[in-house]
Amino acid sequence: MANQDPTHLKNIKDLLNQCPNGRDAVQCIDNRAIPVLFDPVAPGAQFDPVNKEIVINRAQSVNLAALNLVHEANHAEWKMSGLSPDVHTAPDQGIYVHQRIDEEAVGTVKAIKAQMELEAQGVKFAAADQYPLYDEYKEARDQAIDGLVKANPKATALEQESAGEKAGLEAVRDGFTTGVVGPSTSPAHGAPIANPYIDYYEKDWKDNAAAAKLGPPAAGPAPLASGGREREGEIRNVAQQQPPSPVPVAPYVRPPDPGQAADAGQAADQLTANIVSQGYDRHQYDPQL
Image: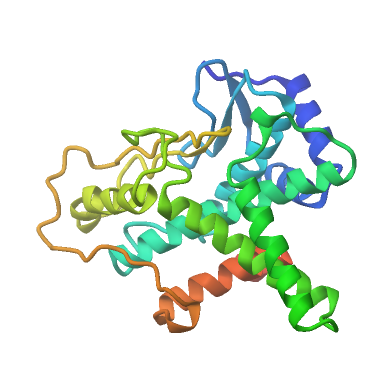
């Protein structure tokens, strides 16, 4: 059963307040008044959009719980500000899946950057506490910066950072679409499998498509979850008793080049890039603030 643990939460917040991405997460949960609960048996961590709370496994170290809190705070921010994709409003399956993966990738990048920022200050992370796709992000980022500097020795620090962020984000997004990480409901949990998140969110779309035509589900979407070295999480279907949609939907295929993407895909990519490189400006995307 999930309960509050003020001391544990304070230790997590104290750690996060030492770095920019951590402070952003703390500010999000404080400004939004999002409760953070701890459960001894819950897998990983999750944001519950129905109860508007974050639940983290109590067995996690302060370091890992802090990184998961960054990721889940991003889910909370997207959902509560209206950025999170919804099966009732997404134009089609392809855009829905694309935006779901973008949301996962952005939250993961923020958690990875929080780890890197803390490490730069001397905080040590055990191997078990390293955030998923950390190595992939860092390798892609470093290679992009090195390649830019070799091609253009006069590249500014901002240009280098932009190139690194773009490459790192793409590497993380690829991790969700190629099976480096996968949901806990995957038959091969933690093992590389073909397009697990694409399949996962396609199923989420299909299972809810019929219910979407009848109006928003009373219970709302299920929690979005994240975990340790192996991606933990389960998105429960809100219309399990509904028959599959009779309308055939095309499988999602991520555009090979952002410049060739459809308008909606380009908008999602641009939004993701802006959020990652510039930080999330709630006043820009939420007119009620």
